[in-house]
Length: 408
Image (tube, rainbow, N blue to C red; front, side, top):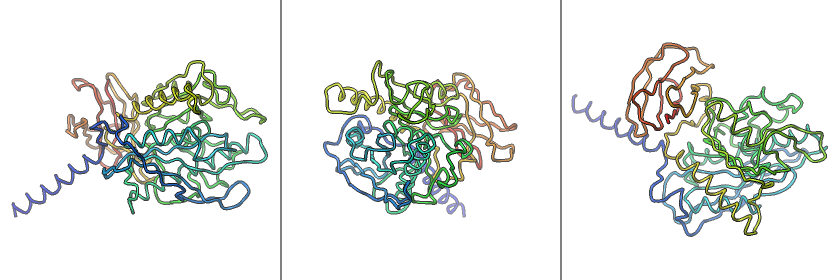
């Protein structure tokens, strides 16, 4: 009997170790930092869903997948990029998104450039808002497409806990909404969200999560900075201070439309910082809209900077334990943490969707070792740094999604 118990314990410990290893990405050997792959393989026109366009017709939705040629890693992070064009033009072959997909695939990422539903009539504030919602629904469907593949065929060998949404201009609006617009009540009533299919939409791959682990915002904006809340995913933004299309700060968008106020990268950076979201803003001083787009020497220099900033922001996140889960139901079981990062104390708030119940809490370091045990006695739990070294930690409690905290 003792031998049987010992064998079962070894199996359990082995499984636990495997799970721990799978909860982060291996970034050694220059992966996700240097262009270690000489070639990439581009798979074009992959159908990821279908949806009704603004004219009432059914539109097939397609994307291109970029993978490092010859890569043998089993599970890799994914960057989903969306092109710009004001929700009226552009496609997945736009030069800037193709360049981004190619560069990051050479570092070892799997990347995707997506087409999404375009056009709206009449050209007014209401309909551009609806177009942005439709496009965001399509991006969420693309995320679900890859998560479904990761759970079934594994054609693209994606690590489903490390999916990031990114975009340029209008595509950045989509990425930001995918990451932070998570409540139907946040959408203005005049948009008619229910008629459009809700936040998730009906573009395909139901039953899988559209949650992303972070957002790459290139010259984009949000309708409300308050959509970014404590506990949300990390954000990296790049934006020109002289952008006359999408404001660097607060301003209006929509040429020829009644003005629609939006909030650009500088305000989103301030908001994210205020609520404890890990984020970075890189400012293109005196630069206009999407300065990294084009084949000129200046544009390519901006693209070099864009690649470097995004690369440097994402790579440390890959080494941190995954907390994004594969089901929508987990959203109500995630405690909020504030501030992140912290210098002395982190406040953990019990999920509002659950009735509070006292329970044990463990704090784990980056190696998976338990460094502190606490008891959660009130809805608000204070975790004091005390003698803990600077670094990233995981807080876990029974029945809750693990929460990442950082001490500086």
